[in-house]
Length: 247
Image (cartoon, rainbow, N blue to C red; front, side, top):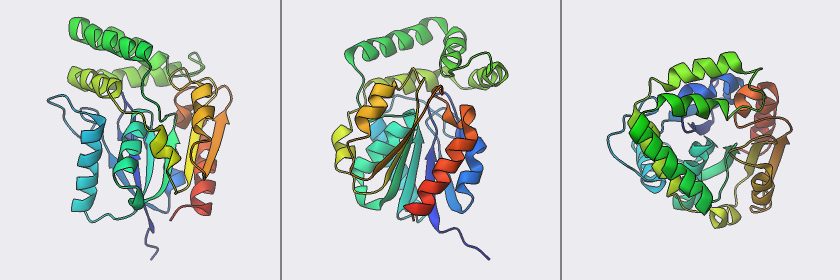
């Protein structure tokens, strides 16, 4: 009997749940996979505001409770922000770090203002209009992804409005982790989209030189959802990375 040797933690992004990782399941065939959920999206409810730092502490506490030691952390978008915070708290417990369409930098003043406007919009008008715009802005080729986008919108409407509001707040007020990544000694993999509006390619390239053991794939003509838009290549790149570096 083959016993999985790798503890790999998957943290999904804002507006999604653990199912966002399903297209990539073959990449984690030999792993002991643990899905962690952002509050209100999927498995964990949300009743009040929270910070990325508080969430990272909560996740480490949970992993302690179930007896998980060293881990590979994989985070998409906002999930990457959480993984970076987890790295800053317990760097010695990471075997590797993978950021999928995510980055280390705090929001610019303009981005913070945009998030505040989003929160005000959600509070005043609800989530329907926002959600329709949100998912369409994540894909490089909207026409090609139309059926998927409609499915994601239906799913997004099932999340409580508080999940969207408090998630936006947590992202707006998160810390910069460029120095955290610079100090990282474990292998780091960055999977980025060349047409990603949420994580522009200049940010992807900028962060790629921070940690000494960094590999990066910048997928041309791919937006913010690499697991859906470039599934086969992402699987291949993950498998290659884990086979070479991670334990």
